[in-house]
Image 1 (cartoon, rainbow, N blue to C red):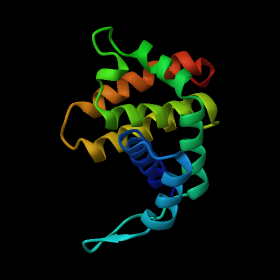
Image 2: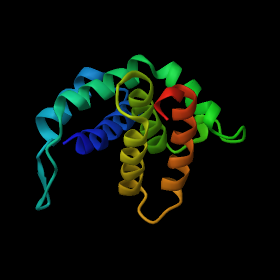
Image 3: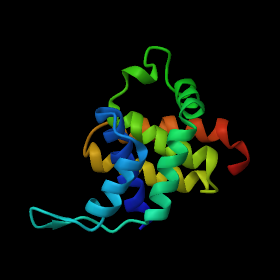
Image 4: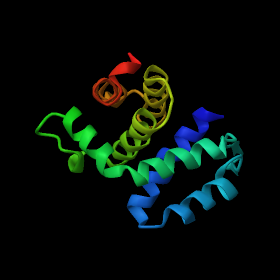
Length: 145
């Protein structure tokens, strides 16, 4: 259920950036209407609502810190503003877990690489995500390795 919560957190952060909706409105929409919903015959996974909300809240409340950490992990030619908005949301959600929550860094990296695979199946993005998150984890929580 935490894996689904992480996927939903990335989607929620993306939606907030794209639409300008508040964290409260987006979180309520996800928990009430998306967790376990059925779309075109496909049932969405139930997610851990508490973990979802915690990740989103920390990503929003610590966005400046997380974005700085992400920027340092990216090459100079690719500042965070030039990154795909889905990846930006993913880095913020993962950054929240890597810097604010007790999630072991290796678990967070593996989980968010899997999220990247869900959004970018067959692309190079999952390897890119792995490299950036590894750098973020080593800088943000060196004691976790």
